[in-house]
Amino acid sequence: MKASERVASRIYLDWNATTPLRTEARAAMIAAMDVLGNPSSVHAEGRAAKALVERARAQVAAALGAEGADIVFVGSATEGAALACAGRGLHCAEVEHDAVLSWCAADLPVLATGAVQVAEPGRAALQLANSETGIVQDMPQGLAVSDLTQAFGKIPLSFNWLGCDVGLVSAHKLGGPKGVGAVALRRGIDLPAQIKGGGQEMGRRAGTENILGIAGFGAAAEAAARDLANGVWEEIGQFRNILERALSAQTNNTIFVGKDETRLPNTLCLIAPGWKGETQVMQMDLAGFAISAGSACSSGKVRASRVLRAMGYDEALAASAIRISLGPETTEEMVLRFAETWAKHYGKHCARLA
Image (cartoon, rainbow, N blue to C red; front, side, top):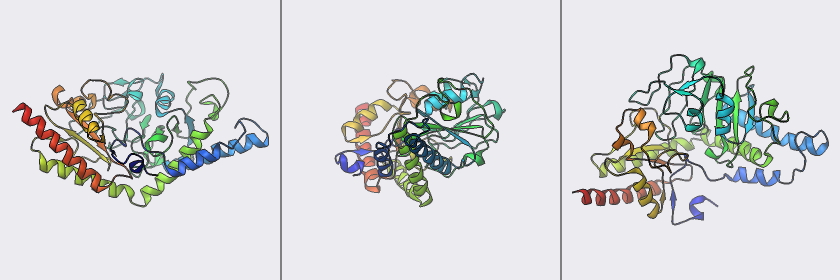
């Protein structure tokens, strides 16, 4: 059953925060429940569990274009960022996700377009696509770390072609379960374990593997790659553009962040000057729409988007932004209903200010 059918009265437009569990992922996780062994055990039951993990590892590697790289399963992309960045003295920009920003010196300059200027790629962490604006970076070769979480499954990419040392991905951004991620390591790159104990995951992440989550991740990654190849995200991009045109036609002072830049096909970041982003989120929620005012990891905090501040927007404008993100279950009718509802509320807001 689709998410839109489960809650028929609501429309989910927050796919960059998390996604519904794919049918393929659910089936793989249910099947994995019957696998008894510990993947580290050498008996038949253990080998069966190990085979399940290795199948998922191959599925993620293939979908990510990381054949020949080491795929290390972790508890989340945030944990992966700690493994990739801790103690390395890396530099990044303020547009990075908090998971990366927490480990790096945020001193790389950001242009008004959202582009990050990287002078020394080997000492830098740079996301491929921003979760709030959808802006896709022009990636230099030789990056130390790249957060691929939002781009994975939405746009064509290959970890091997990117030429970075380490890539970070997460299952729940492409239809897999929450609580599992992966780190892709260029062969020959060695990172000391942050979680120590046994020798699981090639000695880089101790602890018995989350077999259910890993199985779901592998199946979701394979299905996401199939969707991408079949043009699903091209259609989603058309719906995003329809939404943008509909909103633009009904307002005259809104700002569409990154409109003229390369963006993820599903992401629209909108600034309505003078109308607080958190107020928009609450009003749309009451009207039956799930959107956000930025990254899901920070949107609950009442503050202006630091991503937009880094791009040069002032405090008031950065605090008046929302993010609408679409997915494979989004329809044209859904985005047009949102545009109509949002415009009515915006009109009431403007009337109160008049």
